[in-house]
Length: 283
Length: 275
Image (cartoon, rainbow over all chains, first blue to last red; front, side, top):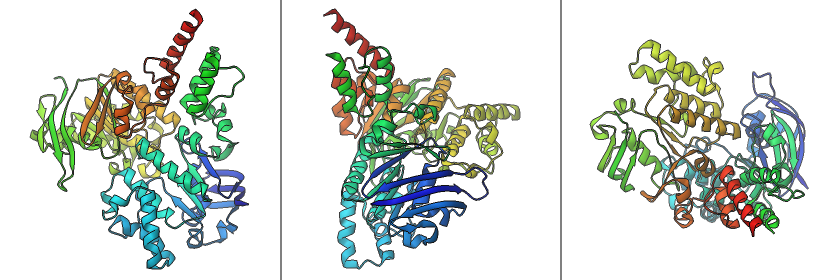
């Protein structure tokens, strides 16, 4: 069943003439992991806001078309109600941290308190999520005393603990080291396997190729590609629209021109495919 | 005056008691392009904050040219070491992009003409000329990051430090950044960057310092550093995409750019043809 159904979505920020999103239509099935890629200014963050109701409820602006999330029409559903089904992890963790709490533990508890979860139920949920996101050691520290990467883990935990049906993430690991990023992506992947739907805006294409079921590419507020990672990430349109490609795709494409990559073989987007292709040719 | 950086037996402990640097000794010659990599909390940011005097050694010394950082104010150090913060919002506070970029050189007491020239050059280099009269906070985070860079580059310091320059930047911006680093290199400046973006580091820096738990674990060119997969792993760093692919395919030596990967592949192929 589709948990997200978007029909002809167009959105303008207040006092702008150029739409940030233009005539978007797509559906996402429950449990899918969809990555959204695009150059800066292509509309990735705005799409994250539209899926969670921040656009238009928080950012105002002008919206036409329809966004249905778990059956709720975002335009006609209050933000408080949408937050129960759709959680947004902001690009800058500083925007997420409430500022109302003194410790990381209290910060994670904050959302649950607002949901009216009984205290006896809260503790095990918080402990589990803190372990899952690797922040147990910081439980009693101030969220502001943490590094950017640690804050990103706290921001993720504060949303995951509310167990949203739809998890929307805007570059969730931009300040984490590579292994930390991998851990976070693996956590998100595991949540998606358990049925959580994930929409993630991300620049790092190697991660997109490794973890996403499907990729939507945006350019100038419009969808230019929508399909499996292997197909979208090897499209020449990505270069044209300044989105780039993985190094695996780049080397295989150049190698193909020199007869060092099998002529009929699809270009790789992950290391395993790249290895297999170059090996096949060596024989 | 050569702006050699000499760090000797540097120890640093934060007031909270956290030991962030343990006996770091490092010399960086004028004009080098150096990247510092390593896991979150390994001491990278603490180390570079020692270079402009934002932090001072608990033990040991840091020299920038003939100056000991303990003997000069942060304001004075700013003439030698420019520092671009990871988060531009930690840095920006003026009403227009032009005023923001003018602030630094103005503070250094340059003559008015020189200031205008430096501002113009920095705006051009960062492609900000048409945004000069905009409030930085009306720009997206990506563009604010460019404003923060322009503001530092306009100070024309012999040493420029970047903390995570590629964060949140798209493909085209990252390519532009590589060109900017090249321009700075050609001007003879020392460029130091902290980065988690290992592919960017591999392609743009001739020397790489790997940190872990407050110490320098590795220091050398990409070729030798990326060969040490175990040491890298100990500080949560994965070698570049093409290094890993090259290792799996056993094409040698250590490759890390599209060009040297293809060169190694061609060589391998020629050798097979001869057999």
